[in-house]
Length: 311
Image (cartoon, rainbow, N blue to C red; front, side, top):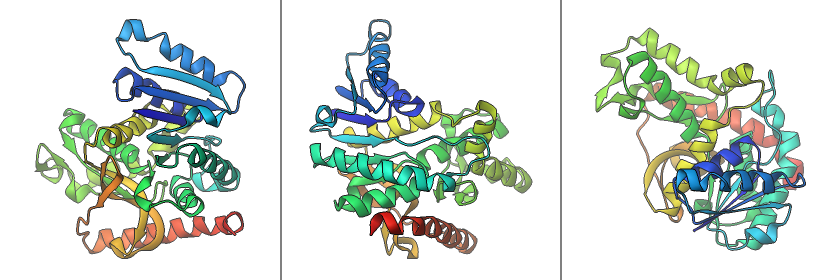
């Protein structure tokens, strides 16, 4: 199975590394516009094979989309990363043109691929890809909820002092500091609601910490995080390539689900070989539904900035 990743920066390279190390793909193509950059990353990762035991073929190319031909999954991480103090929303004007061009080039060489969008602002870039490419909505997936949910689980595990993998939790809504919705009501520790172990005050803090999880790391690192984002992309790609049908919160195009139309936003989905196999209705309560409506309105306001590029 072949995966092409456009953007060989920290997130793209980490995704490639995880995919190779875990043997998820048989071939990975890294593409970047910087001369020699993707080639260097691919070579560096390839030199791990002897010591880590993987057999994945890695290819690095400079802006040569022909090498991505017949990919099963394509991942777009292109665009500038967030800088300290910069919101995802501020990235729209810069990244929209990049994502549109990249998506069109990838589709020309891999007309049957499932597209995974990582570039920020992710919900808006996913919507742009859907409107630009004209392919079935199940084949365009925004990777935001997988990362936000991983951060949510981490904060819950720290508060509980329990293993992260024993925690089940999900974040829906927009992939933004003020638009994501950590579903504390449904979070559990080995099937037991976390509310039995944590106070409402603790849960509120965990929710707040989750929502600014990306900004927190940006302030600490001086740039966007990459280990967890790269691993989250690989987790999503794994479910697609191996038809695992995992339930993952993803930004997908809604056509009436959750009361929303003509928008890409994070909701729980079954992810398999066809991309989005099913959108799951988890029956939000009144407060969660109100938050989802507000989140959708905020995402729509960002989408308005695409009017010129989509015209």
